[in-house]
Amino acid sequence: MKPPRSPALLHPERIHPALWRGSQLAQGRQATLSTGYTELDRELPGGGWPLGALVELMPCRPGIGEVQLLRPALQRLEPCRRIVLVDPPHVPDIACWQRWRLQERRLLWVCPATAADGLWAVEQILRHQACAAVLLWAGHIRSPALRRLQWLAQGSDTLCALFRPVEAAHQPSSAPLRLQLAPAPQGLSLTIVKRHGPACPHPIVLSFGGMRSRSDAASSHAALDQPLPAHAQPGRPVPELVG
Image (cartoon, rainbow, N blue to C red; front, top):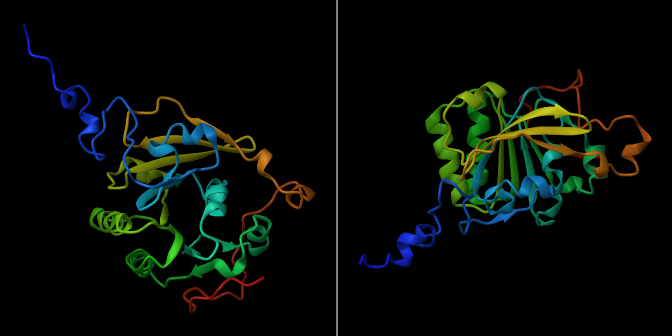
């Protein structure tokens, strides 16, 4: 008669929170924040956006709703802590943020002179845990820089989102969660490129239609961004967003 297997061998995922089976979503002790979308929470380890980890979002083009995807999570963050936007492709529309009930005094817009300056700014934010969320728009990033961002994020409780071109999905990354974004009627279609768990065989389609505020409904669409005005100067000192 064979001796009975120990519980640890039957359930290796119980040995340590960092262990997980390839056939199941990881359920570690890492803090998460609900995305605000039940269908997306269901597919993410821990049931939401990880806090203290790098999240890569790769839209097929800027302005398809990638920021609105984070809207419910941003609204759930501590109201006394800042939300930082680093090098967004367009000037943030403060009126839109106000409609989202996010106070403009919480928003900080960083306009780095170079991509390296942008990475440095995010590193300082993560190192000092100065903000509740940091959103960085970046192009090509070398693997050592990604590993450094992930390492610094792990020592924080920050929601750290990195927006990269869709071509970056074919490149290796240390980010534990990576999603490709494509437009869909009234929302987005998400493809999970990487997660701690089995591959997600189908895209996740989210609708923003039911999330529009009364003031949003007054127009045919609610712009998240506005083109950079002619008088704005790239590389100017870091300003706070004002109404």
